[in-house]
Length: 274
Ligand code: HEC
Image (cartoon, rainbow, N blue to C red; front, side, top):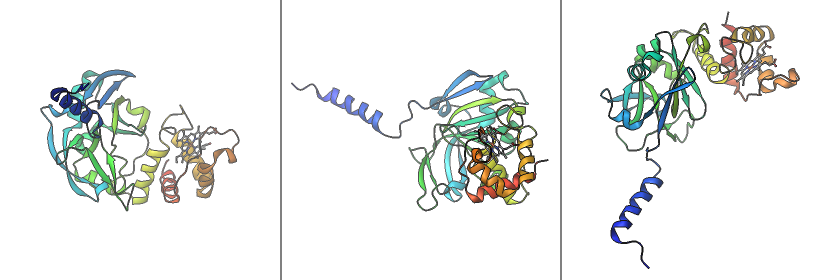
């Protein structure tokens, strides 16, 4: 018996295409949290119909600073309106990616450096970019959605030359965080500081900050940890990060595979912590 008459076959094919084409966005949602509870869920439809949605050109470090057009909404305007009173002027915002990477920014920085939340490319149906930083030879295709934090100011362009840690992609969650918890008092190198120092700060942010913050909740604070590094030296830090348990049986820090370039950079940054 032929179950597929013309009409239902068309519907079936349409459904199959919808679910199996790799680039559909129907379930892409971003959760917004404050004080550990869900405030709202942002859908891509909310963004595409947002009155402040616009096309912006971004010089993308991942694509060797090519101009890439994105559909985007100004990050701080959007988040202030969605969080409302849950976001006080002192709070910072954490952008959490699908791989667990957390990028924390102060509101002042989002404003000054003109951060946007991009949700689509304006020139393609597929929301992606080529990542020549992760894959210098091939420039592998990197999915960017649901959200990609991009910056427009000249200053952030300079920062992107040294590191792209401040350009989190595949953002699945945005959280209001008290500034004291993540960023307060942790020295940030000035934009005109030595390149190695600025890169060292980014290594610290990506590889150490989640445990060694400004408090002692999880591990010794950055201040205590940096004192130990200043006392023990670079060689010791290399041995420690490679295998903490070898130096201190039972140490609760996991072994980290740090490239020697990153080790050197984070070491330089830690020298600069008071
Ligand atoms: C997953 C959590 C975690 C991460 C990530 C992490 N650490 Fe640690 N680290 C710890 C813990 C926990 C200790 C305390 C170990 C102990 O004494 O039991 C520690 C201890 C240390 C110490 C010794 C501090 C002291 O005064 O005794 C240094 C130095 C250190 N870490 C450096 C680093 C550096 C540099 C990075 C990033 C490249 C890093 N850690 C990333 C959890 C972490």
